[in-house]
Image (cartoon, rainbow, N blue to C red; front, side):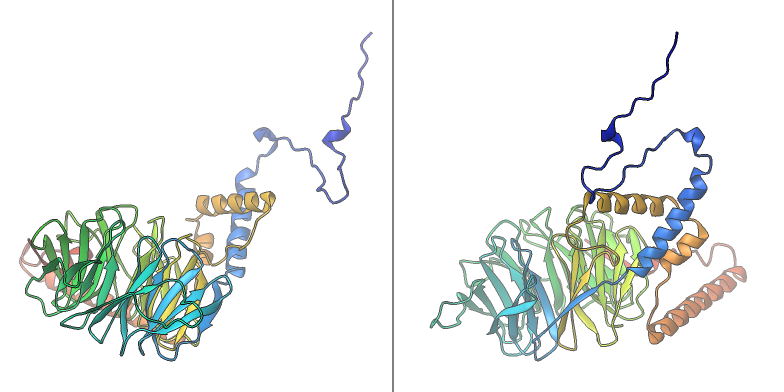
Amino acid sequence: MKVKVLSRNPDDYVRETKLDIQRVPRNYDPSLHPFEVSREYTRALNATKLERVFAKPFLASLDGHRDGVNCLAKHTTNLSTLLSGSCDGEVKVWNLTKRECVRTLQAHEGFVRGMVVRHCGTSFFTVGDDKTIKQWKIEAPAYGEEEEPLNTILGKTVFTGLDHHRKEGVFATCGQQVDVWDEQRSSPIRSFTWGVDSFSAVRFNPVETELLASCASDRSIVLYDMREPAPLKKVIMTMRSNTVCWNPMEAYYFTCSNEDYNLYTYDMRYLDKPINVHMDHVSAVLDLDYSPTGKEFVSASFDKTIRIFPKDGGHSREVYHTKRMQHVICIKWSADNKYILSGSDEMNIRLWKANAAEKLGVLAPRERQAANYSQKLKEKYQHHPQIKRIANHRHLPKIIYHQTREQRVMKEARRKKERNVRKHSRPGTVPVVSEKEKHVVTVVK
């Protein structure tokens, strides 16, 4: 005789305490879930809508400067320390955890043009309009001690940019020429010139640490190798570039911010044309910085907005703005990939989230699992029209909205004119020039 007995293990369905979540038995057999895709689509749509609801990127404003913030510097070993320099020569050291200024020093007369923290994190360098390079201790002086620089180098001309080597006691400055300095010497160990009036920015490559790039006033971007006696090569563009930034993960790639409202990503081996043109700003782009992952970068513009671009995307995925924020002069992406710091004309430093809808703080395992699931759903259904429209929609200030439309109309008018000229010309006399090739004049080696 066969007897069927119901056997239940209380551990499978009884909660240990009343604070636990009820256990729900689930059967994952796909034949029992015939409408899986439609259910997933609904969940993806809801997740996209909730992402826009919870998108509140602005975190804090650090005020205390008495003039416009001209440059920012990240600490190399400490996430919570930020340095800022203003147009009145003042340098402030901030504690981002407490969101307060911990130290103020009068570093220069006139603008602080550049600032960088040494690779070991014990000191930092500043350059200013008073033709000096100064080295300062990161730690504040003890009670009763004078606030004095560790070292001061007097230059012959005004310095406009500064960057430090990632591994050695070597730093580079730019002004009327690009100089490479040893920390122990008061004169440059190497100087590079290439028939240019002045340079606006210089950056060391974080991967191939002997390489440098600089932006010059003759609309060119010049590449150097510290081991060579002369510059390597330069690319001349139709308009002047303001700053340049290397990709921290891919040694050959760098991005430059340009006066023609665009950003250009180049492969230093093939400078004939950029590998990508990043468009969306409606005024000159003043600064940019890569995320530590190398997958995205953030740009600061004269149009009072901050935009985040994927490294291989032509358009920004995010735009940040506030009513009070004026021209954004400098921008940094924090070393933990979570925050963005911007310095602007109206004397404020602002702290933003890198992902606008990300929940900060410690996440419970179920919360993290739900967030990862929602993210995967959004990626899976990102090309569906309704989801794409909601995910891409951003509210813009009225002036930027109208300028964007105006730029679009002007661009379309130029395309139409070009098409008409080509149509009424002899075949082959008016070649098709791609957007990437339009902005490069020549490459000099």
